[in-house]
Each structure stands twice: as structure tokens, then as C-alpha cells.
Length: 424
Image 1 (cartoon, rainbow, N blue to C red):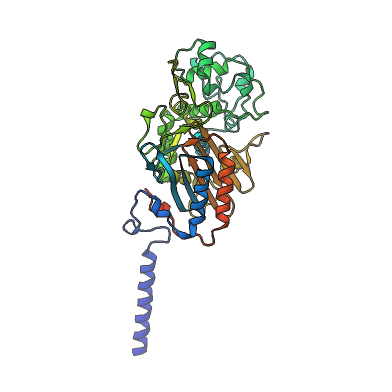
Image 2: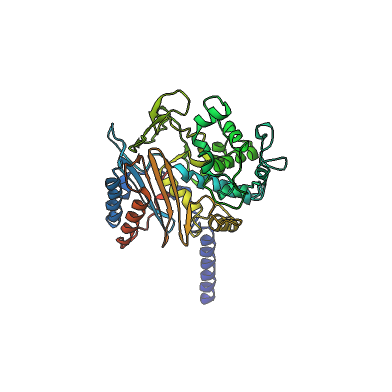
């Protein structure tokens, strides 16, 4: 009887333990009271001797290109292992760059817009083969009348995504940057708004049949922003923030302002040392302005080049569309990810990304006073470098790519911590 009692006791004990274990949280379900408190990262958070090669080579980028400031972040196996600033966010006031500083990211904004469009495709709100203009298109009504070339009615959403809508910069330049020409040719009043840009473009010659030639088009991506607004009934910025960014922990990204007085909280100052760093104001005032502040309508350029972000949020964006899902699941379906990387249609250009070569994907961005390079690199490493300076000479992209890759070769042990978990 004693032995039998012991057996029953053991069975009951094991049963209770199994029940308790079944109630315990899984590895991915950490109770809120055990999660690290969210806070603003500082440069000190990435002071790690194992990552000293990144410090050295990032400083080399700043020094060799004579940048006033830059921000760098690195992800390894979808963990944020490094986020630091170099140089000055504001050189006049000697404010050093920290990971929280916001930078204009130029055409990296196109990756944001492409991700949003493909998410809408996944959700059944839009189709890649949907026509853009005409009675059967998304954009119709009085403001889209006056089309003279019937091929414009053949433009589809996918053509805007892969820069094959049929426009050419040779015809009259980039329509997003020629307010004086639009004012003169169409008698449009200053400041030129996007409806007037659309009218200028669609009432003129379309050089190529849609889907047949690749020609990089900021205008095409701005049209994608208009399509998002038409389909959702919300502003482009609001919809992106609510449906793409904030649900994935990206809380600091905003559309940039046009003037220095529009600088956001924690946004850096921009410096352009190129020979043409003074230009006429886009407003038509006739005044010469510092090119980063007032030469271009950055707000109108929003879907193609108008976002500001810090380096941490840039890496949060990247892990949403990096093709890995062991730690952070991609925001897009496998089919949409395949299309984003391999392209669609006869001209197989990637969607949103600037270029793809095997496992190496990258997106560049440029505006006066800023350059950005976002890279999904080899061996589970991804990174971003953004500057607040247009250098007098030298290639920001080749210098940054070489320096970052050289630093990675020297790292013997990668940290296991994930700064994403503590970064607000």
C-alpha cells in the first residue's frame, strides 16, 4: 500500500508540473512586466569592444567624405546590434549625432511607398494590373483630363512601381524638380502643386509604351502616393503611419518640411557643399536659397523622397521586408516579397529597392544635404548609413559600402543582445 501511495503521489506531482508548464509563456510570449523598458538609445548603448571595427570605419566615412555628421545602424540575424552617430547634427551649436536624430532619407522613401502598395495588394485593396488613368483607372475625374497620348491609359500600378510607365527624363527633366518650367509652359501659379505637375505630365508626349523601357521616375512614385490616398480616403502620411509604420514599432518617421524653420524635433541640420548649393526658391519668390532649404518642395515629393527617419527606424523597416522571418515576420506575403525582389512584367526591376544582386539588396537616397544607403547584405547582416551633408567630392555609396563591409570582416564575435527590444 505504501508503494502504491508513493506512485499515486508521483503521478499527481508530475501532472501538476505539466499543467504549470503548459501555462507558462512561450519563448516569444514574454509577460509585459518582464520585458525591458523602452527608452531612447544613445551612442553609449553601442560601446562594445567587439564592434570597434564599425566605429573605426564609420568615422573613416565621415572623415574621408568630409561629412558634418552621419548615423549608422547594423542588424545581425534580425537583431539590432549597433546604432551610433558620428560628427554633428548641428555643427554651429556643436550638437553631436545620436541614434535618435532624424535625417531626410531621400529615395529610401520609395521603399516605404512600395511596401505600402504591395501590402494593399496582399489585402485585396488594389491590383498590380489595375490601370492608373481613365474611366477604368484609379485616378479619374476633371483633374486627370487632357491626356493626349492614348498610351497613358495603358499605365498600370506595376509600371509605376518598376519605373516603366513610359516617361523619360530626357523630354523635359524630372517634373518633380522643374517648377519654373511648369510655371512658364502651363502658366501655373506659384507655388506649383502636385495637381499641376500631373497636368503638365499627362498632357504631353509619352516617349515609350508602358512596360517596355526602364526610366527612373520620382513622378511615378508620387502618383503611387496619390493612389494610396484615392483608395483609402486618408492622406498618404497618415495612412502609412497608421497601417505600415506604427504597427511595426516605427514611431518617429514623418514627412520632412521644406525650410529650416520646419525642422522637426531631433532633426539634424543639412549642409550642401556642392558647387550649385544656391538655387532659386521653388516658391517663385525669385530669391536664391541654400539648396537644402527651399530649392525643392520636399513635402510634395513625399512618396518618392520626403520621409525623415532615425537609423533605428530604418532598420525596423528593413527587417519588415528582408526575406527573413525567424525573428521578425515580413509584413508582405511570400508572393509579394518575390515580386518586390524579382520584379514583375517584361522589365524585371525590383520594386522599391534600387537594385538586387543575389542576397545583396540595397536602396539609395539623395536630396540636397543628405545621402542614405540602406542595405540588406550577406551573411544575415543589414545596415544603414545616412549623412546630413552633400560632399564636395567622392562617392557616398561606394565609400560607405566598402567601409562597412571591411568593418564586418574584422568582427570575430557578434553580440547576442537585441537593441530593438529596448529602443522606443
